[in-house]
Image (cartoon, rainbow, N blue to C red; front, top):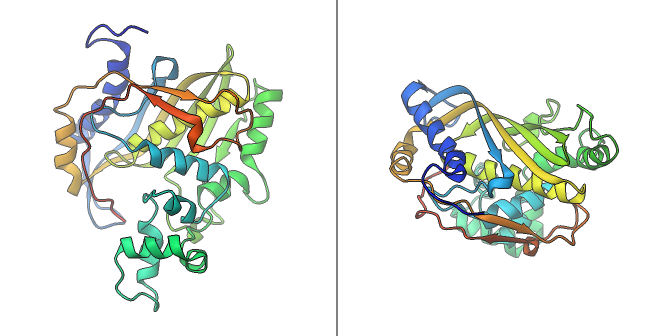
Length: 301
């Protein structure tokens, strides 16, 4: 594919994210939240990413793809303990188990880095303090005894015109047992003209820290499912409920808004993998990713 100028399709695709940021800043309302940080919030927004035009990994800041891939593999395996992530130097879920550990009598003033080291070094400690409750992976693979992912793959292959190609991570009977109720909570797949598309409904969208991860994660998930179902990737549709920018991340968002999107990278996936459960980190290769520098921000827990 040849990219010519600023008005090319890849710029239009990724400009959607910046337009989301501007919409929140210009039309959103100040709103309190569970964390006490405070937000500017806008309700109801949708973006569409044509996966044939490149992999939608944000280019106005560097996004940590390693974390995205390992988290997705973690979900697919039905795992809910952060040990797998910590063992692979992925820290994105550490805050919530650490917050639970801090409330316990066993907490001795450890930093979150020391907590992660204990998870890595001790299976016993990890088993006790690394669990996140019945979050995404549990619901994908065992929602009241139903393996939703297995059923989805079967139905795409055998009944591609179905309007029931759905996975739900929102389980009201188990929400209270989760360290963080699902933010990206409901997805529907759609087969047309040999292509697989996915629409995600995200009830709560941390636009600076979370949404860039979510776009890339579900785009990749769609590509993986398409491959094992002998389909081509179609469109990823991202529908947001409460789309918000935390008050402590406004400077970071405004910095991004000064940057122009760059050419989208290409994601190559090992074509020999035929089962959704057989993917490994080494099966993914990102090509031509040339983002602006990363921008740090603190997650609100």
